[in-house]
Image (tube, rainbow, N blue to C red; front, top):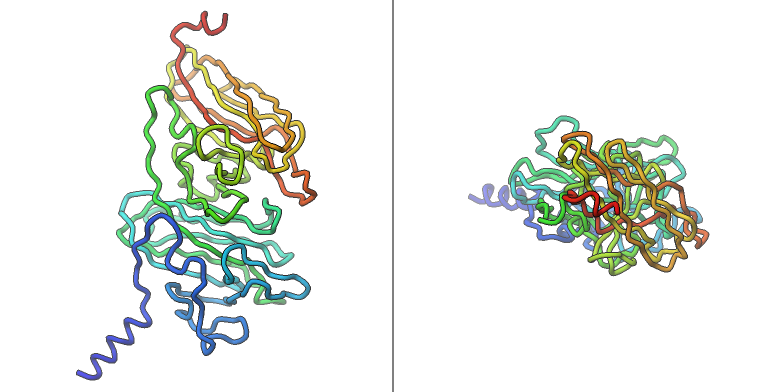
Length: 375
């Protein structure tokens, strides 16, 4: 009886228990609860269950804001602690979900090394082969060194294990790797097309979780890195990410959310809609700047099938927008609507951070009387 009790207690301590999570931080998602001193050697975490609610492997450091790496001071954006993923390091947590529904993971990340860095984000179980995201950390988009990424998945069971992994192995410095902080989860709804719009989620109100204490937006990776876009209805069919922004920290033309096209023609967002051949359609949208020191001549290119237009916008970096309209004739039963930024733009604050035009309030309708529209 005594041996059975001891065994039961030991299993409860060492096994990772799945947590039920509402929209927001995972349990200890901000890593403010850390290892015991006996489970660390310097900053290195030595036990796989040392960080409450997480299971770790590989070379993991528990970093306090203000710690130094050579001459560089490591700053944590929220709270006092973060984890650094060194050689072949991963952090995992099991959470309870609703099978068949879509979720978006959001987390903060910062580079700490000159070498190329990347993260492998995945969930298990997963019925789709090779369904994981390799997120490159080479391009940083914020002015303070931290970026926030979103990554979406479909739950293939009532419980999933979320994993963030640094696959790199550095011979010279085992600690080399990105800092991770504030890991959150959000259930994504499947927005319906409103009666006055053929597009889903045209005002971008449905999207990944946005941390209330960060002011640099959320990067939505391209579909080559994430099969399930965290922006329901849309896909990022380009080489680089687009930025999801909120009205609490940026100027947004409509509602509380919008998209910033931050990487020129390498930053594109699109949606495929059903159309009727030879029918006329009108696409309306807003183009502006998010009041983030993005100054200069900008333009948004719009494609509808083979038709194209360009909408210029002169930005003073202090917020503003204009309405635009694009009329086209459908040549197929399905038409891809695509938006991209014509130019690369950098912030005027000398940070070297990429920025771009804001897109919002996108609406597509069929035109019953084309002559009246074109008159």
